[in-house]
Amino acid sequence: MKIFTGAQIRELDKYTIEHEPVKSIDLMERAAKSITHAITETWSNGMPVIVFAGPGNNGGDALAVSRMLAEQKYDVSVYLFNINGNLSEDCKTNKQRLIECRAVRKFDEVVNEFDPPKLEKNMLVIDGLFGSGLNKPLAGGFASLVKYINQSAATVVSIDVPSGLMTEDNTYNVRANIIKADLTLTLQNIKLSFLFAENQQFIGKLRMLDIRLSKEGMEQMTSHYRILEENDLRPRLLHRDCFAHKGDMGHALIVAGSYGMAGAAVLATKACLRSGVGKVTVCTPRRNNDILQMSVPEAIMHVDKEETFFSESVETADYDALGIGPGLGMQEGAAIAFISQVRRAQIPVVVDADGLNILASHRAWLQQLPKGIIMTPHPREFERLSGNRFNDSYERLSNARDMAEHLQAYIILKGHNSALCMPDGNIVFNSTGNAGMATAGSGDVLTGIITGLLARGYRQADACMLGMYLHGLAGDLAAKEIGMESMVAGDIIRYLPKAFRRLED
Ligand SMILES: NC(=O)C1=CN([C@@H]2O[C@H](COP(=O)(O)OP(=O)(O)OC[C@H]3O[C@@H](n4cnc5c(N)ncnc54)[C@H](O)[C@@H]3O)[C@@H](O)[C@H]2O)[C@@H](O)CC1
Ligand SMILES: [K+]
Image 1 (cartoon, rainbow, N blue to C red):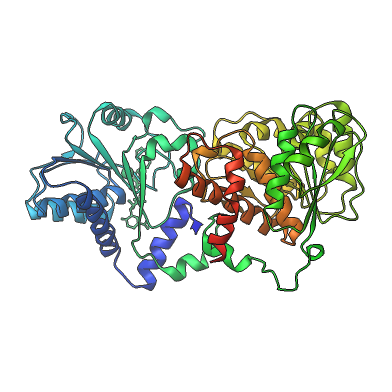
Image 2: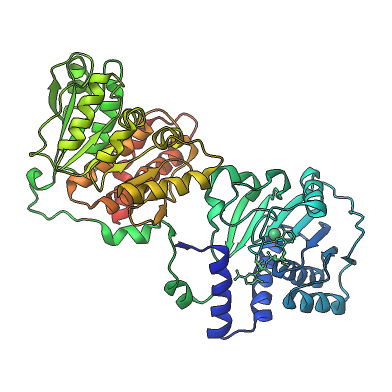
């Protein structure tokens, strides 16, 4: 599914109006009907409704919803904010329709003075102040109103966007002046800012309402942002022919572990083996040999000459992909072996964990990375890697997109909705995964999966998309059966086969 910016949504709106064709006011009526339906489905008409409508089309939606609710015998009071005497055309029409229907208990057009109504626990507030047309942070009277609503115990439903929240960039927004909704009913498509963890407090529960904007228009419009869906991945799956031999299924090399960190190597290797690859060799310091041999008997060992850290890069001619970094440690010897390994690899490479930390402390090496390299940092690892501190997820994501373009790399920013930044500037968000996966070793598992997929023959972009999707899906399947609270990284590996099956079926 594509994600459109506020400006693109306005264009799509126009395209739909011209091509369907449908009058703009009728499109608003359509949107209002589905918003009303979502509300009446959830709350009965015993609940008093207070509507706050702004001067644009978000306010127009709110006025139309007020009329529809009042006609269904809801007790509705409406406040329309027309401070500048400048309502949008459709907002004006809906104001007139609302007055004519005479069904609302109270209609107050606020031009100057505003005496806010009492908001109580059993009330439903409909926030139709601003939507995708917001062009600066809320201030003055609107900011006070937002704070007043947020402090109340009433249930809040936002139309399209919680008022005050920008659809993309909120880096310099004033967070105290954004509505904290219990439910956001967003029109047609999810907005970029809804994908960021720090904005979840504003959105509450999210529902997307299909208002039938032109499908053709959406297909034609290019977008740099996309959310991964199962249907995007199914056609990309490689199938196994019945004469397959382990030698045809790829050979992955995992370079991981230092003394005390054998577990990271175990997890990455096990996950790699579970990702369809024919063979996995793990290169680890001598002291980890017995642990690896016993915990992952399917893997081939390549034991480093050092007891406690990785010290010597491996010839990669016999391998199809390299995953390097989990539990590698940060000794200077390991750092030098790491960069030598990455530089001499003539195969696709995934770098994670200490591999990223090594790069962060030798930032000049970033320029020596091979094109097409895959890096999988979590937010703090990315901060260290980029040498920046970020105010929010949008700033971090923009920086990761720039770095991916500059280095011609694939960067997976891990987290709630992991984001894959590609060398062409496009970004794909993952749609699977859950909070139970925020546990030690979960990243090592992802590294193993992507390395396995690369060795199996997937191109970088496909391996990244499929890898993050399967990783999240395995976590979701695990959470369904064993819950999130006590989930560990090994559980993600245990559910990988079911995740593969789910995609293949
Ligand atoms: N394509 C769609 O998705 C559809 C969208 N509709 C609605 O239309 C909305 C967008 O409407 P608009 O483009 O009119 O935009 P909004 O209604 O979000 O706001 C625009 C108005 O707010 C003012 N404004 C912007 N920032 C402000 C600020 N910081 N302080 C004070 N005033 C500010 C503008 O000057 C303008 O008057 C959507 O959010 C949605 O609710 C629906 O009506 C139907 C179809
Ligand atoms: K709103």
